[in-house]
Length: 258
Image (cartoon, rainbow, N blue to C red; front, top):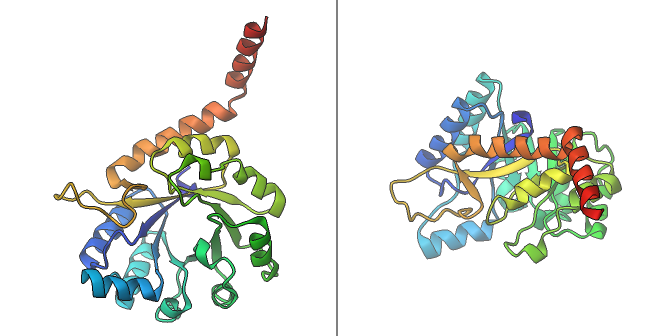
């Protein structure tokens, strides 16, 4: 199960290397194998510096050190990207895997750069239509290292359709995972019905300031919540896939009909 879990630091470090190292150190000491950081658009960084006096950008050295430390423990560090302008600063660093954010699903130049790395690449579909997904995948000749992520970017249940996980698997013949971006764990539990190939979860550290709002605050998990989350996924998966339990449910349903 742990090998199917990808942790995301996102921007929950606020550009502070001290905060980022806290996330990294938790990951290095944990049972988890994968952690990704995120690069936002250049305009986002410029706005945050001007408006809020916050520089969310981490240094090259941080990423190089993070990769070195992770590799010593047999772990992997990935990078989520959405913009050529910010990726250019880090494109020479050899991350272990990449995630292309949904807003850039049809950014051909960015996708080409990522594919040249010849690493496992996750494509976040967000609300991507079948047409846009097909257009994106059409430029990828060899798909052996391509995986898709179903993510709903809305907290409104009307915007979420978890059945797309199995639908996308069948349609595009690729592994499809679930990226959690919802206000509670209901979608995680229900996603097990559609057998996602893997999961992406944002994480954050507990702070003495309990009112601290992280960039991915409402859908991120505290470090100490992750073990319980894994147990919930395991149990939900078992309940869905265990034949004896499914048979009992079927028999009970037949009794009700009678």
